[in-house]
Image (cartoon, rainbow, N blue to C red):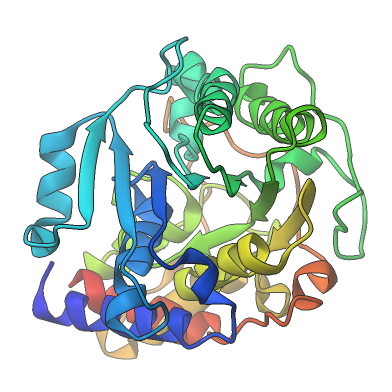
Length: 354
C-alpha cells in the first residue's frame, strides 16, 4: 500500500476501534478469518490485529488468515510481515472436507465471490464456500475446546425480488428462482444462514449473521465488477462513466469502516442465531445519482456520465432487484450508527487507490 493508502486505512481502523464495544471479549483469543485476502476479510484481519496496539484489549489476538493463495496473501499484508500474531493457512473452501483449525475461539467467515462477474463463469465456486464451506468451518469450530462464536458474512441478495417502497427488515423476503444460474449467490447465502442457525440450535455454537448491502472502500479491485468499483476506477482512470443500465435501480452505499464496525457490534452485542442488516440506510441513491456524485467529486477532471446504456460485457449478470435498501433498526439497537457519507467515503477510497 502507498503512504496515503496506509494513512487512510489506519484512520479507518482507529474509527472502528473507537466504537463503544466490549472489545475485551476478544482479548487473547485465537480468531480465524476466511476470505482474508479479500476486501472485507482484509479489513477484519487488520482490525483484529490493531485492537491491542490501539488499547482496546489487554492481550493481543492471534489471527489465522485462511486463504487459497498464501503467497498472494503475504504480499497483500506485506506491511504486517513482522507481526507475530498473524498466521496464514492455505485452504480452499470449495473442498468438501473439514479443515484442521486446531483450537480456535472465533471464526469470521467472509470468503465469497460477491461480484456478479463470477456468477456466470464460476457458479460452483460461488456457491460452495457459502454452503459446504460454511458447514465445514462450523464443524471445525465445534471440535475446538472452547468455541466462542461464528460470524457469517451473508448478503442483501438473500431478500430476493421484493416489491417494497419501505426499507427491508430482516424478515422481509421475496422470490429467488433456484433454476437460474445467478441464484448461485443468493441461494447459497440463504443456505449458509440456515446452516448457521441449525448449528446454533442443535450444537449450541453461537452464530451471528450479518447482511451487508453495497459496501465499498480501499481494497476493492478494478476487476470486482460491481457498480461502486467500476465507477471508482472510471474516475481514477479519468474516464467518463458509461451506464450499464438505465440508472433507476436504488442502492444504499456503506463505507468499509462503518460496515466492519457493524460486524463487530453484531459479534459482540448481537443475539446469537439472528441476522442483522449492515448498511447505511441514509445513503440511498439511484445508480444514476451515484454516477453523478462520482464525477462531481473531482470537478477538475471534467468527467461526465454517458447515458448510453452499454450491456456488452458477456459475463456480467445484472441484478433483477430494482431496490435493495435496508431497515437497520435492529443493528442500531446495538448502539451502532453509520458515520461516513458517500461523498466522504468515495473520496477516501479514490485517494487511497491513487
